[in-house]
Length: 424
Ligand code: AMP
Ligand code: GLY
Image 1 (tube, protein in one colour):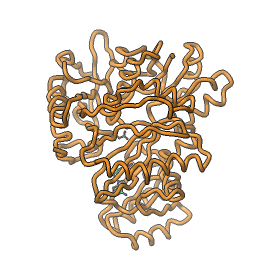
Image 2 (cartoon, rainbow, N blue to C red):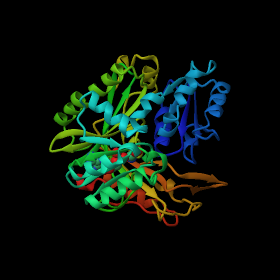
Image 3 (cartoon, helix red, strand yellow):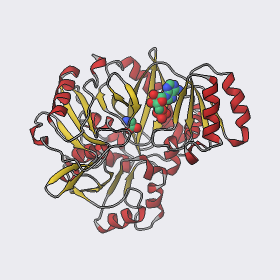
Image 4 (tube, rainbow, N blue to C red):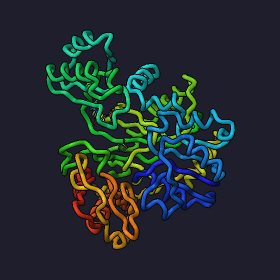
């Protein structure tokens, strides 16, 4: 099979690594990829939202399957584009069509979906220009803190947690009237605050059946001890020690099954990954959000634990017979530590030469924001490398990944040395 991965981050590197091991693979391409992905396949200079370019390339190279990494092309309808073109509709696309992608693309859609299918989530109400006054009055009836969420995609910045009514009101106005998050905040979901500990569960579905992938926890804040600004993710572990079997059984019964069944009942075709962000509130799971793709850096920790052939599973998704595919997961623990550019998630410099990667022997180094510059690999983004270790226990995995992150060098490099140690 010829496979094209869309994206360029650590997540796509992990996909490329795993897919390159498949006996079913003939040729692997990554568009656009990074300085690390060419170890596993061929990088293609195409932008993730260039559907025409991607389609033309897919025909030219006889691609059988396109695996979409990031949410943006899905929300913009890359899968629908392939289905709409006579010469592309035979190519399998892993990732939902536009309608299903609304689970991530619109918070209001996803909250309505959960309400309709009785999936546990925080209580909510949505407001826009037409009922802003009602929204402001509604805030006064809520407990503090209050959660405000921009309805649309806002690059992970559209969620505000406010500790006072004044702040909540002024932010609601800023979001709706002053377009604080642009179009994304034309509609705002006002949500009850859930107190607990977060984790993520991943599901692969062909729209009929599903496999529950390993769960993971990511660390979003830039600073040690979970302090400072939010980032795309500074590290991850899988499995999650506090998500025991009884908790995961609740997740499957109350959330995963009704989600897949709900999509079916609503006639929403869905072939791809569902990333369910959960809050564990005193042992009870609540959905914080859906994403229609895998997480980054969760994927790096999740995929190294999957023993089965990922291409076989993806083929099951495409053909609608996922139920027949074998699926086993390693009992080992994976830990990922992200190395980022100094200044990230604020302003940072790029083009710094990365050295010493060859001294990492025990962990896998997944490239994220990297670029080939002549003979050098240089930094090209905020999140630069994901260092993933797979060991018998959590402590060994954390120690290995953290130590190996320390072995790599570039000017201004930063990583958290405390990823996962809170779980021990
Ligand atoms: P989201 O973009 O929906 O993942 O929200 C970003 C972050 O805000 C989440 O990862 C949580 O840490 C936090 N958050 C979102 N919704 C809630 C909620 N209802 N209660 C508490 N924290 C929340
Ligand atoms: N690590 C969180 C995400 O991928 O959205």
